[in-house]
Amino acid sequence: MAKIISLVNQKGGVGKTTTSINLAASLGKLGKKVLLIDLDQQGNASTGLGINKGTIQASAYDVLTGKCEITDAIIRTKFKNLFILPATINLAGLSTELIQMEYKDPEFKKNEQLKNAIVKVQENFDYIIIDCPPSLGLNTLNALVASNSVLIPVQCEFFALEGVAQLLNTIIMTQTKLNPNLTIEGVLLTLLDSRTNLGLEVVEQVRKFFGDKVFNTIIPRLVRLVEAPSHGKPICEYDPLCRATEAYLNLAKEVIERDGN
Image 1 (spheres, rainbow, N blue to C red):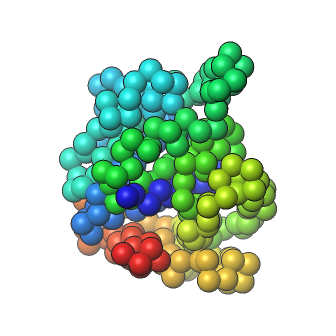
Image 2 (tube, one colour):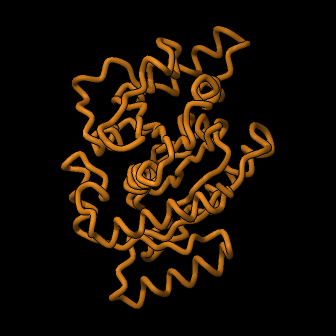
């Protein structure tokens, strides 16, 4: 049965979608069958894996609003062992629609729609990776309720921990009221420019704050990593010899090791 991991940080530009794409692809490279769920209305994880939004017939929005079954919306990508539940701009109005549906039907649980959908396919995968939007709204809450754990990307820049306290409060609230089994998978340091003292100081600061929850792997700031999504490829396919390819494969190995697989 799949381990479900949400990538969450309400702060934009921390490498969340980049990590979602490349962690999922790297797990696939290592022989794990992976489903990537794109919950961001921008759909960057979808286009980053070469999905043409014009050809999407069913998306995460359709699944969460009950318009189709999750099995009808999942797309097999051209990359090894990797499948995706794509996103479209329709996700922008999801929260309002779910609230209206709950108002009309008291039995309807607006926070549990993704969880209910995933149950139908969880046994088909080893990992389900959820790319959350840069907010702590209803889309992200659905992800947290559905997940076993949370992976928090933190960029190696000034104000790196800004907003993290709010995120941790949201995780604690979810654990207390909605999903008592939710854990923190780990904290991932991203966008490290090792040429600057600031980056190294942030690494030390984050490790001091989170302790052994911080992954050993650090994702470097590299132009090739930024280029890859525009070509519709994860970095391991776009540039197999890139340092970022090695970093994300190491991250995938750490995730597998932490799960004891």
